[in-house]
Amino acid sequence: MDKHQSKTALVVGASRGIGRAIALRLARSGFDLWLTYKSNHAAAKSVKEDVERLGRSCELLCFDIADYKQTREVLEKRLNDATPDVLVYNAGIARDNIFAFMTKKEWSEVIGTNLDGFYNVVQPVVFGMLAVKRGRIVAISSTSGQIGQAGQVNYSASKAGLIGAVKALAREVGRKNILVNVVAPGVIVTEMTENLPKDKILPLIPLARFGTVEDVAAVVDFLCSEPAMYIHGQVIGVNGGLAI
Image (cartoon, rainbow, N blue to C red; front, side, top):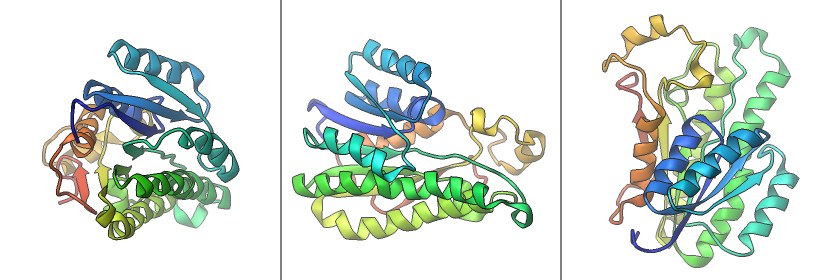
């Protein structure tokens, strides 16, 4: 992609954590942003202000990606005007529990956001990308989706499902100059991981440190910004060697 060309990135789940870091990194690379979030208006406004301080435009889109009708109503109005050059699907919630005690609600909420949301958001964007014959899509999965994690059967299933969906989609759209990949973070320091037993996890990581949101954002930025790209349908782990 031409770094001097005006580009737009749609970043899903961008109000905090990894999504926020990705949005700011892409803004530094010259992207204008469409940022989605569910309910945290203050956090979303803060990201918007940070993006604009970097000299890029930023539009906020508020909706629940697990709600098919709501997602389509918001997105289709925006997609009628333009198709983003890049889509980063960064949605993810966790409702951890031992599977034997996992409730239907804990299962359904995680699958609904992490996996159903992928269809709700990505499908209409892909339709537009096919029309213009270009695009980059990056889905944020997890090491849990690659190797599984006790207490996270629902989360691991949803993140493994993302990997399968991306690999299949990559086979469908590659000939149309649409590149689709997965970034799979390990233990990244965010609000989602603050209650993990880090003293037990750290010895399992060969790099002997936990990841930062910037570690993930740098890889996503590369996949979205590098002009000559021959990476397609791949899963790139950002985990410090936790999964080798």
